Length: 194
Length: 194
DNA sequence: CCATAAGGTGAATCGGGTTCAGTATAGTTC
DNA sequence: GAACTATACTGAACCCGATTCACCTTATGG
Image (cartoon, rainbow over all chains, first blue to last red; front, top):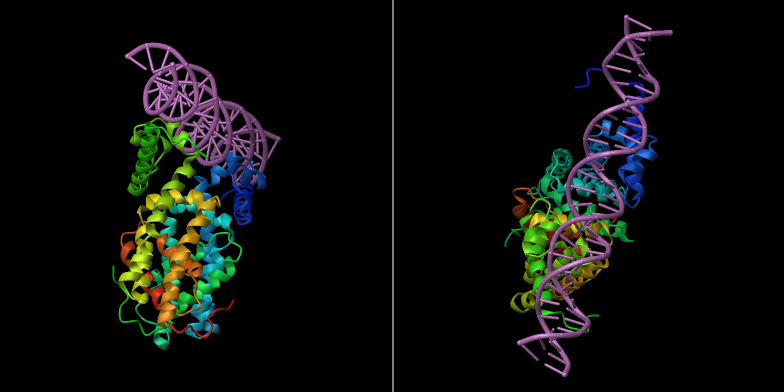
């Protein structure tokens, strides 16, 4: 919509705000209030609101960038590893990435509550990444074929939501491994039930 | 602390508040404001605060009850089914229970953010439940022995956090099945990595 | 160098949780 | 069953953080 291409200072401030927000979220700074983020970026709250409709919009944008970074990975992985390994690595990246600090997670919660479309979009993209990797594995015969990216993503969701806890990183690795093991089967007879 | 045993009307109100809160959360009533809950219970906000330190304290109590109910299940399951089946059923119950509406989940988020001890307690109890079931399965030789309740609980966490989405119930079933499949192996060589 | 639209500012507003002085009542005692 | 008092209840006032907006500042292009 902005036919006119953002004034120089505006672009600078917008960037500063995104950076400040990311830092604040990553630092988990108990709170991460709008005012704090604005100050950290060296601008007034009003400016923040000029660039982002609301607090959530800001979080969304930061999140969107994270997702974009993450979704750039699969192609590289597929080139360098066999399907199995590529998938395994991506699963870990998924954890690593989504774990960019509890702060981010906390910040995201407000969005999770709202059912913003950003999330649908992000989910779709990630699911697509997984689909590609799963398909490769299925073609190679090492990964079961009855699980799609959407499902796997959901399964991984829990791992990504791991909270603070001390040993979360190890836990995440073990759980990811557990799920990965579940994937490496010629599809069980049928575990659905209740 | 209350050596004196709560006045009759007080007990009644407390009960009404808990019921109202549970209903509000289950209904997912966009918001579930303190005021609404109080009104629903037929009391003033002040009364709510007399019984519960804060909004979160109320959510906590509701949650605590849910957990208590859930943790009562395993013994019955173990009596009626073989270890494998008992575990499988409990996993589904875990989902069913934790899914008591997105409202509850949303309400819980505030607590997840705070690192309240209630959660540690709940986790511990649930993990203990799972440990029992896992041990039985391991003894029977059908379940791998290198996964403990704590880990499994975390893995299931994701499933329980499934949001609104239309087909969440099916998804939950499939993911639970996926994880369950991961469990039914004589322990893979070693999936840990990054 | 001016004009002016784009951008920035921060005090005021708003909404929802929380507090507390004032009022009502269950339970108890005579 | 009337008085007494510890226990409860009420709801308007308060607080705090997100959001708005009337007014000021400055990049940009002519």
